[in-house]
Image (cartoon, rainbow, N blue to C red; front, side, top):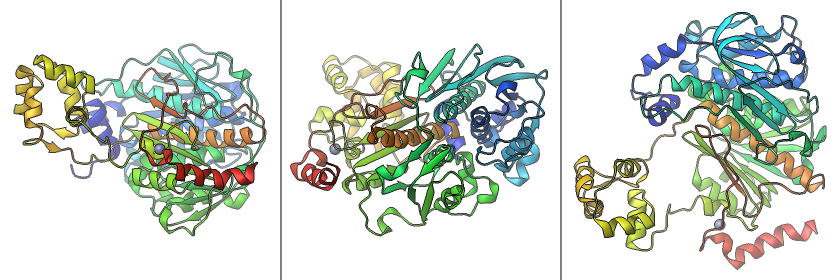
Amino acid sequence: MTDRSRADLFLAQELGVNDFDGARDRLAGVEIALALAPDLAGERLGQLTLLVAANILCRLGPYCPKIAIVVPDTACVHPDLPLLPSGSPLGDVLCRFMEDTQRPEKRSHRQYRVGAFDDAFALALVIGDARVKASRTLYTWYERWTGGFADTSQPITYRGSNSFGALLAGALGATGVSRLLLERIAAPGFAPQPLPRAAALSAYSYTSPSTPGSEPDVPIQVDFRAIGPLLLVGGGAVASGLAFALVSLPQVVGDLTITDHDGIDATNLERHLIATWEHVGLLKATRVAQLFADGVWNGLVVRAYNSRYEHLPPAQWRTMIAAVDDADIRRRLQFDLPETLLNAGTVGPEFLVSRHDYGAGPCAECLYPEHSQPARTLVEMLAVQTGLDVTEVVRLEGERSPLTEEQIARIVERGELMFPEEVLERARHDGFRALAESACTTATVRPELPAATIGFVAALPGILLAAELVKEVVFRTGLTDGPPLAGAQSVFRFDTFGELQDPIELARPSRGCRCQEQLMRAAYLRRWRDDTE
Ligand SMILES: [Zn+2]
């Protein structure tokens, strides 16, 4: 039990699963189809959507169902498709790839095969307009920046250079399939809400646009020199999604430096989209650099530093990307004053993508303050300790009415303190008073929970970070009005277990944060405004 994977933790925490073997057995009995419509079989973006979906789903590891790749026999790997050998039979090499993400001794338990359009499946993810016999089918589609899925099929006609719609179609499709699978093993009361009949997301506007074709498209060639020097901090799950998205761009000019001191181990394969078993032991930064082959792949040159950020030679990075799960590093990066800091992170089934440029929105320190909630009054402190709202605490203190089960559940889930069961029981009768009395005597501070994650949650923010980079470039070169993550609308939070249509948040800087000090603002302006105007 000490060696639980992060996916196990995720299932326990988010879905209430406690019989892991039972859950594995149930999922191992399901066969799903990943199908590509014949008219897209030779297309780069159709194949990319299929690769993303397969790549994410096979990372469910021990919880991965049987997967059949359903493509026309003649489909061969497009020369611009990453990770798979160009010109090889698509179905065969994709099955091999999925096997290669599993431990060699576990491969016999996983069953991947090339299937046929008239086989019967429990569940199908179909790219484009094709028919597969399945009890439930999700149809994915993409256009420009937008990708999504729906209950009914629609033809895909987009043939341009923008990879983001296809990447999101694959990732959201895999998220939809994962939800339908995990529903089957969730404990009662824990299942995510029913999957919406349709969902789509634009990596440009973070909306679900009714006419994706009206959003400005990317040029065939993206030139990163305008936003350099460019540094990626972190080489883990989110960074692998970002690297995967960047390696899917047709043509890039410029270079990117990545720094990470860590190596790829077997447990990383559950969510590291660019690693297979043969990369275990390799340093994460090295693996990212390797993918781009010194600029030979699509032009992007990636330089790897196998060290912590603090040990890099000092430099003024214009654009920094924080793909780390450490609040300390995020604050440190922000304090080092890049012109633009792009950030992403995951918590349970949710993720966040944010952009920070010392404008009207919060900085990364506002989002990740050193002291989680600077509590000033007793009521505020009690609110933090119990996880309830301040107004709720005020009301409950006055009323003395018993706490509801819903409130108790929130306290258990969100409170900074863990209350003994007998105190919670007392609160059920005597109300909030019981908690307030116990807060400083019997409750203990919640220990740091190990990060519970699962592949499909980390892939999406990685893709969106790559889109932010590309938008940063096209914005600077005057091709679009501006990056949508800007000003007070600079934080996008998304719940992969929710309605799949979360709006961009309105976020304000924190009072008292370092970013509001005159000295810091002046230093920022001195560094970045002199040479740009
Ligand atoms: Zn701030």
